[in-house]
Image 1 (cartoon, helix red, strand yellow):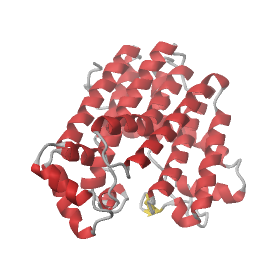
Image 2 (cartoon, one colour):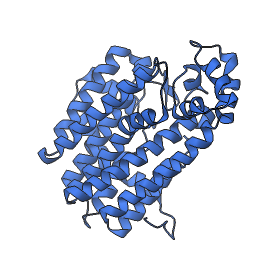
Image 3 (tube, one colour):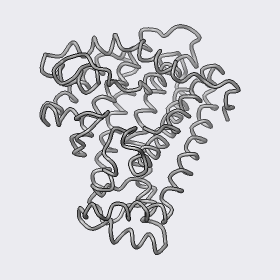
Length: 337
């Protein structure tokens, strides 16, 4: 296992540095688009408002920070052009995935303001997501395109399985964890793998870094699902209990439904009613906790973090970069938004 740092890692600095390093390339990529799609992309990313005025609503740059840290784990040098390109491509794929997710989920809010499709329409959001994939593929050197293509396949397969689960008569916990590994874990895995490869790691070490990211991504999804039920909307930027109201099969809910208990059976009766009334939401939240969904999700997130660091240890990264990755992992899994 990678030891916890004796001096706290300055994760704020890591994220700020990552954003500063990739933002010029990120903006240059978006500037290649025509005015209509460029406007949607920049709004979605958080660079400007719907009228094109400068804004401060951009994301935290967690994935580029992971890419840069994994590159430093094998190259004790400033980030090369290939590393910057990889980190930028990962962020563009992340932008694409969120655009399409908001459309498919019908989420009208992101980062405390209307989501892109709610502001500009579904067609504009879908097309903008599509072109961001093209921009990402343009950026990476040929030896990294295969890994980037693999993550696109995993993302779409994971999203397909997630959508199918919403109407399935039954969904088991392992199936949902596999979906989370593809839908969320694959992108964090690619961020780490691409960074390692661009930093000069061999294929075996890069694969261990990928698994570090995949396990971390599953933990990330578990925390996200927990926040979707018990998080503070003022912090998360999403409406309270939106997943519960939409009857989505988030991981805590699936774990609770799978329990052999009276609370699980009561939950099933309420949750499987098509689009039940909002009045039932507080009771559903209570039953998910009572049936063990919250406790299980918190324990599984911790287990995934341990698996992530086992994988990182096998990659044999430089110690300083390993501690940075440790700090980023703790940031991801201890967040409140």
